[in-house]
Length: 398
Image (tube, rainbow, N blue to C red; front, side, top):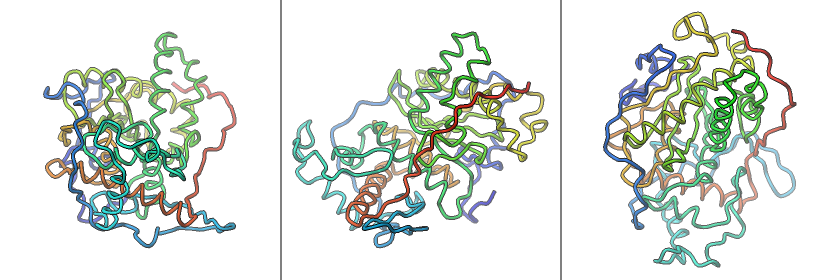
């Protein structure tokens, strides 16, 4: 595994998920692991505040004149370019001021001061912005990304995580092997876990759950990567009981499910325990069902954290501490940023975490990317998933 020289501050923020960094976390080896104690300060995601213009901390565009294209194939008046995505540069780098101004002008044009941000005629975007996994024809999508304290929707996170998957897959000299899921995965795994518990935790219930196995085998989503080809998988998770976004990350080498949360409270701890348990229990069972370990000669199941455990034993659960804490309803922005920092193998800053600037960066780069597709007839390959052959999972080894 390669790293970028001079940029790593191993485990300073407690968030590094490379093999070197996770070794320092000293996970508990018990099958039933308690989530680390978290302080009580904020009970729920705060209510949305009134709009507040913020200075964005972005100054230089990663691709003002060039999309840094890869392999291209021209057909007619349109050009399809493989491996193109909006988040080309590091998350810590800045965006051109002129691009920032252009985006702000776009968002603020015909904006109203009341609860309805735009009149119906101004709200509809024609043509729509085609982000492959979703088409956006509502201008408030971008308005949300331009103002602090506004919660992100599943559409925001599905689009951002789609392009983060592309960044992890096609980015130049990416330091770790990682992919992501979409927001739907959490709904599926929670449903399957409920059925699994009600059914007496019978193995045959796992073998019939094709949806999760399709994710693991590289199907189901745009730009998916089979899990046996990566070391980490990132999950955007919504805690439905309190409507709050968190980030989950499974590490196959460490047999651990890590949780990144921008709030700290007893209520969150209880909700996280409930949601994370589904991942910790089911993922090991599904990995065996798809013969994951037969495809991973680098994971020695007789040594290290695998020693003395069955492959089907639950993973540990660990809550990452020393993370920046949200003040407004910005949990979705934090989740997206945490994911990009992990993909880039960078420590997550605590003292200088500019959530407003990072929120704006997502909006600016998505808008600029979408406009280039509209104006120049260029697009990235969607890498839409191919339907897998329906096969039953094989009997697991004990």
